[in-house]
Length: 146
Image 1: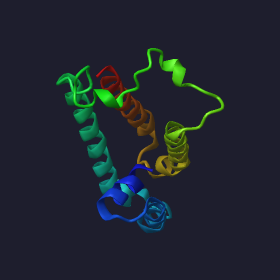
Image 2 (image 1 turned 90 degrees about the horizontal axis):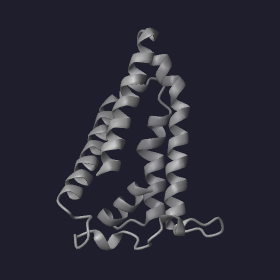
Image 3 (image 1 turned 180 degrees about the vertical axis):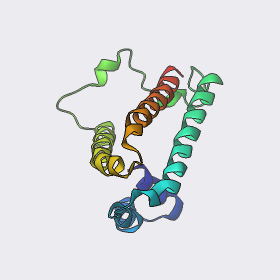
Image 4 (image 1 turned 90 degrees about the vertical axis):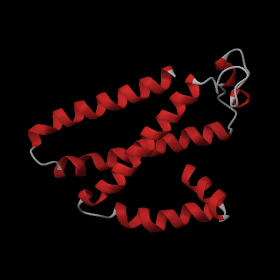
């Protein structure tokens, strides 16, 4: 978990303990809320964090940091064929990151019904969903092309 790694670096608390503490507080009580409107401020903060991350990725791509000779060029895999990294028998740190992302994406779906129930006029659902998917697609496309 990214947050566990971040807390380990900032506070010195071991990663597993940091993730357990975050699960108990504040994530646990927030997950038990009956009304999701209380999460609107943290949702805005999360959206801003995603936007800043995308801006950093795009700006580093444009300034050549990821290109050959750039500051972060050595972090990229030097394989000529990206499919050389794919294996059905080998687990790596990348596999753990993938499983983390998949579980996070799956867990988000459990809140879809609660979010729909709390959406004011139900006729707005299609419009809100189109705008959200459109903005997400635009953001992912910009980052992917960078």
